[in-house]
Image (cartoon, rainbow, N blue to C red; front, side, top):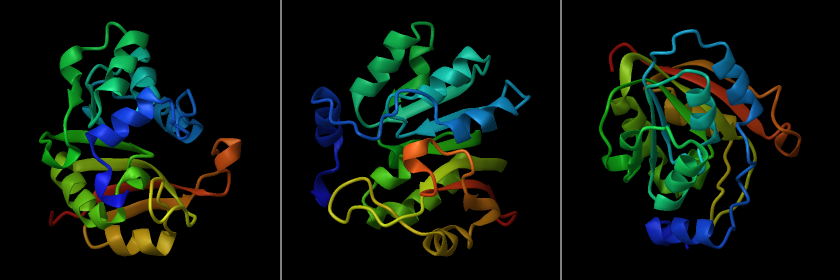
Length: 198
């Protein structure tokens, strides 16, 4: 299973409607973070976005430079059906690790936990490469042990600090106070900025 988390695997999950991570709306911590953003011109990336309710919420609230990247076509099509005026050129079917761009903000929502954990160091490097010098990675990470052979994969604050701290200033990494009820106490809200030397 661990070596087969490819396009076919993820497309199958959508086609078979085995998408237990999909809550059907923008998660509360990210909604409340978005609500306090004032600059609607920010270039925002949502990688491995799934059905991308965060992108839908951003677009409906005037953020026009929102890019969604996913390995599977189905969630991108689902977003386009829900939001017909979302620009097709901002819906990117691609491997996150091969994607290039420059963003002010990257939103993390269940993508990190969907990756085989061996790719976590590569995730850190790719995020670093995609953020502008004063950009920010914001989102949620699970703070509990989860699966070992299939997503979602969990982790701990200590693990994440070890992973990110060499490259990012950790502005916030603490238990989310406004998680949805099924995830209460199990999520860390993060705000990270690249260290100046990177």
